[in-house]
Image (cartoon, rainbow, N blue to C red; front, side, top):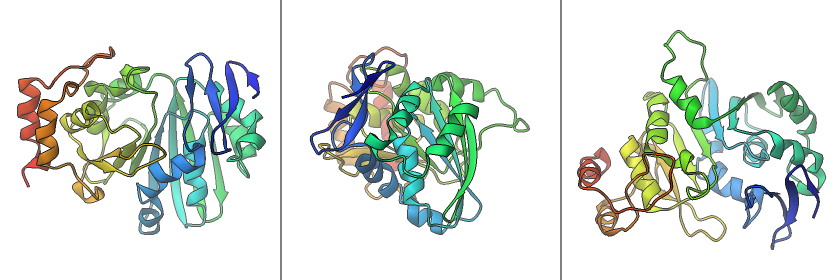
Length: 291
């Protein structure tokens, strides 16, 4: 294991290598490794290859939780032979994990061919390049994502602003570790920034009841996500039912009412609570359960 600047390389049980944050006591992609997790959770579940082949114009991907860039690079590599224009917008409150990962690119194994692009990305927080059939514009927003979303609501339609996404890679630390990234206000602000005329899906690794309730009350349609690693299910949300293969149904809704942890967090303080009467009424009225 190699340690530097608060991060270290760790070898997973399947032989792959990943990055661990010593300050946060968190290993990135800890079960099946960076590439396998990103392919299962994002590339395949978002049907990116199919959507890009049938897409005209710029395809916008928000990468929420840049980390060591495994998700972003796996997405680019998996779709590089498709003729498409990708705008990739990454968000994180720190850049150090990527700096450390790039210094250890050989051990991590997912940087092959992108090293020079990442050096420019680190220097300028943006880079543009042609790769295979792709034209890529990649930009980085350094800072607090909840604040970014709140401030964006003040922008006028004539302001130059990050375009609404077609896909969101949502990879924040867990609610217990980072509750600010899992609140109802955050997902409500995120949903309100989506373009209703631009189908968009958001997969994430959690299958928790509280997350799914939060997404529904924020306005999303929500479905069961693909298994990945040791997780039998994940979660996928979208602004249209057409992007969900297995939407949550009324049987799931009845289970929610009995859960001890279903009420969304409204502040950045982790806690578990049963569903309130008001939230139950709002859930029942959600269009997803009116079909």
